Image 1 (cartoon, rainbow, N blue to C red):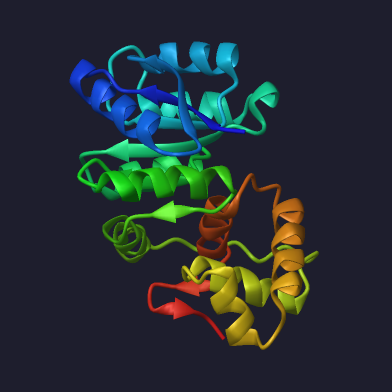
Image 2 (cartoon, rainbow, N blue to C red):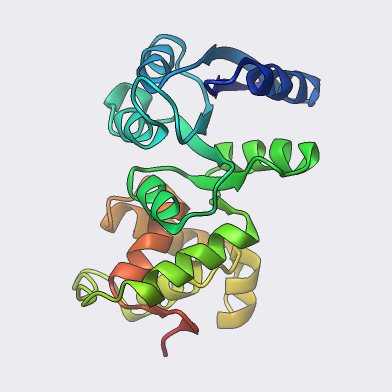
Amino acid sequence: MNVRVLIVDDQPLIRHSLRLIVDSAPGLVVAGEADTGRGAVAAARDLIPDVVLMDVRMPGGDGIEATSAITTDPLLRSTRVLVLSMFELDEYVVAALRAGASGFLLKDAQPAALTQAIMRTHAGESLFAPAILARLVEHYVDHPRRPAPAPASLTAREAEVLSLVGAGLSNHEIAATLYISMGTVKTHIGRLLTKLDARDRAQLVIAAYDHGLVSPRGPRG
């Protein structure tokens, strides 16, 4: 079945361009459009899309507020939000991820990168443009905070996997680093999502930083 995409942007030209890109990609289809934050929430509840392409700065409720409303709605448990923005400002990145966004992509991305990002987001992966991941790291450098202790329910191995997720490693890279199978990695990821009450991998990245398992230079041993 096609991945159904809700496009949210206050500029008609950008919405039209995104619609052309999405509708021309195999396996993707535009489910609807919205031009305000409040409109995005209403459209999501009406259409139940698989992925929402969410602009950040809009009238009528911004994209961060709309993202939070969508990701906390029990009826939209399976809907993922991919934030699109012209800006790399760290406050947008962190706010979007804390609101439940599954990824953050810049609007200057190539069409192929956008369609791949939609598919990966739908598959439950987190997606960050390199510049965005750099901003996330800079945020934790410039705004140091006392890390919360890792939950006691995490095993040593789960904490290790979480630290590697936070460092941006893929499942294949984690398996190679820890000398374990892909199936074992996926099992650990599933348990981390449950124990940390996280929607997806993006929230695990935030959790890894918040619990002090990742430093700006990489995972802590």
